Image 1 (tube, rainbow, N blue to C red):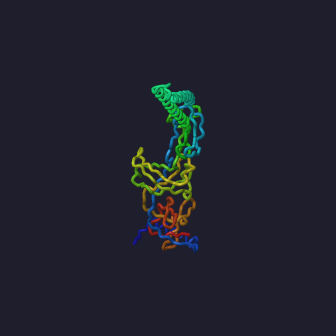
Image 2 (cartoon, rainbow, N blue to C red; image 1 turned 90 degrees about the vertical axis):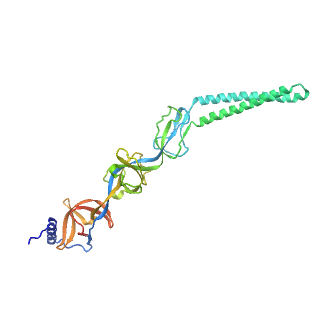
Image 3 (tube, rainbow, N blue to C red; image 1 turned 60 degrees about the vertical axis):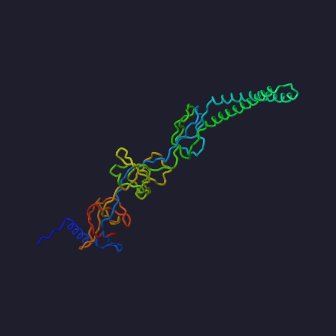
Length: 341
């Protein structure tokens, strides 16, 4: 009676016969067997994340005038309250001179009024001066004293405006851009420098079909600097999704990734990121169980006829319970006993 035999079984039997004939059955003493079963594999989506600053604060001019000097450049590190530029206004100096001159005149007038008041107070007892004249002199002295206080207040305002010509850094950080040039005329509220503060993070965007699968707190892998996608997996850094924005932008979902070690990165620099977008079942074998000869991958399995080599199609590296493994796309099936060195 004819017995059905699959092509795979014929290949296994032929491989076993060849292995026995070539002496491949003499395995090292350290060899072992692993029965492969379907495992859960996380699908990772490779995207590029862009380095963003948590906050960009503008350093603005508080008074109008001419930018006399600029003390920072792009990339400079600044501390909170540090002077980064100086704005000058010639009108303030002229106004200060005018107030000082008015103060001197008022002080001379008030000295004269007080002298006349003291003379009138000494003469009123002898009837040489009337009471109305004494009250008039006292009022004049008080008015002049009040005018001096008003002039001093005006002078304090001008001095404060002169002090506000110093543009200070609102927070500690790194200067991104300095759009103003020394010698240029600036208006109140104009930006002299833009400062990145609060550290950096990665902003990623994924197609809309993945919007329902990404969650806040998901672990991600961050590659090395540069746009080369084929970096070493062992050199990747771990990060996590800290924010998923509820609004789609052009059919893409936006998320923020937090990862350490971005302080020396350029703001706007792109970095490869691998984000989990789903799970599936797959067959995987230890990396050491896969050998490559002449561009073809082989896995040695145990059969009733003895050890045999089977050609397989390998996939990507996955994380299994026993450590790093290789996904097998075809050539093996659940229950096969894979021989490992």
